[in-house]
Amino acid sequence: MRSETLTLNIGPQHPATHGVLRVPVELAGETIVRAQPVVGYLHTGMEKQAEYKTYTQSIPQTDRMDYLAPLSNNLAFCLAVEKLLDIQAPPRAVHARVMLTEMTRLASHLVWIGTHAMDVGAMSMFFYAFREREKILALYDHVCGARMTASYFRVGGLAMDLPADFLDRLSAFLDTMPGYLAQYEGLLTGNAIWLARTKGVALLSREQALALGVTGPTLRGSGVDWDLRRDMPYGGYEDYEFDVPVGTHGDAFDRYLVRLEEMRQAIRLCRQAIAKLREIGPGDYRLRDYKYVLPPKEQVRTSMEALIHHFKIVAHGFFPPRGECYLGIENPKGELGFYFVSDGSPKPWRMKVRSPSFTNLQALDPMVRGRLIADLITTIGTLDIVLGEVDR
Amino acid sequence: MIPLTPERIEERLRERFPGVAFHRQTGEAVRDHTLHLPAERLVEVCTFLRDDPELDFAMLSWIAGVDWLPRVPRFEVVYGLLSLSRRARLTLKVAVGEEQPRVPTVTGVWSTADFLERETYDFYGIEFAGHPNLTRILLPEGWVGWPLRKDSPLGYEEVAFTHNTPGRTKPDPGLKKLAPKKVRYRAQ
Image (cartoon, rainbow over all chains, first blue to last red; front, side, top):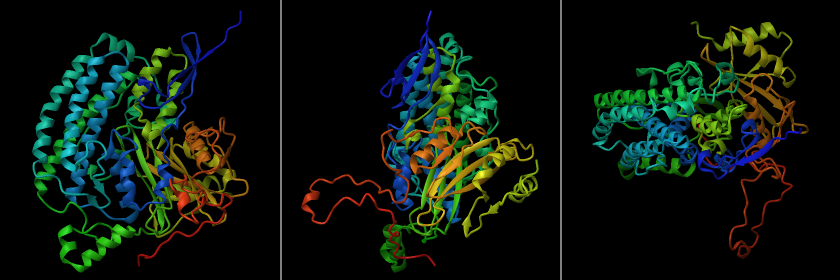
């Protein structure tokens, strides 16, 4: 008797692939022999475009990479440029950035928990998670006027100051959040179907995870105690207290527990940031070094010098020194890094994006080999990829 | 835990590979520890960096290509390494010529290099000798050219009503030399 494998095409347009991911799956019966993802359907050449734009002009591009965590991308970009320029944002901006980035982590994980649960059959979870996410997006809207494409951080600080009532509105929301998280846990953690679909599925060993360069909750779910916020602190995280959850089995259920705990820690970090911001009070929200940062509008109208700086920055951008630097931050999905090569002109000679989703996606094939086709859907969900960032 | 200093990494590498010409990149704003090394020894050095218990660079974080047109050699392949246990990063650089851009693959050292090298190949046309499946990854299979090379244009789609603008044509596809960027002011 002769046996043949069957190739089944999943995607690029498929609700369970979370965007435009195509996975041609080689099947022996219902068992997966090979599943090599095909990507690039959303490629827009952001790295090439950045070479033709000033540094500030590239910030809106970063929103569109991981569009579920726009402010985290902004932060990675701004911190990398600040490292190249060797400047630091004032304390108010630093803590506001931490606060907003942790809100972003919360929002991104909410989308993950909603879609992942929906993929494996828990339909109602999606509505619960999106209810809370909408509240976070409303807070974004309040702070910068956009729900998703925030572009709120600038090199040297923030685009504008936080609204006066923002901290109160955020703390009111944070007070309700632990109750919602308990609700999610009630829906999922003891749920027999959820356990059957996630426990022992999408296994990734510690060694595999390291060799595959997997980062973020996926790495921690495999039992590697590594978080850039704690281990290589950046952007003010050295002043914060938080725990890093680590899994033991490296399966989809452990990654679920890790992300759930990360949401609790994000709430904790937000509260610490609010306390710090209240302590600092009103103050500079961006640097006063007008070689790199736009001067305040009032000054532009009254001071000749400020006007000149304004025009120079708007028309030509700022001039970093010749050199290069890399900076990686802990995005909700993993390590997002920017590598800049500067030739001394206001446009980067090269901008490289180290995108966590792109690297994590490589783990798909080893995770599903020899498993059933239904586990592929769980695996795509548990990897938490965003195709905007995979393809850039 | 004693932090791993860049000097210590370099010392350890020179001890182990006395014949290899490591060259540390210096400059006004080179913010990370960057070592240049010849492409022939790349795989050995990477294997040592991964396996040495003192250095323990267990993860290859990223690979980037850089086009330095009109400099010779034209390309650079940059490897970003991460040591989790020592909390250290290291950047390795390999120079690649224009005529036959080829670097040995490090997929045998870190399997993550699979996608990362394919991406660099896709953008720059740099071949990674020994790579198991060196095909385009982000661009369509039939794409002609290497988009991130400096002599590749940003994208010239015919704009509507272009025929009304005399003298406005598509760029010469045989364009080799890069026009210098327009920089009117320079910081002191």
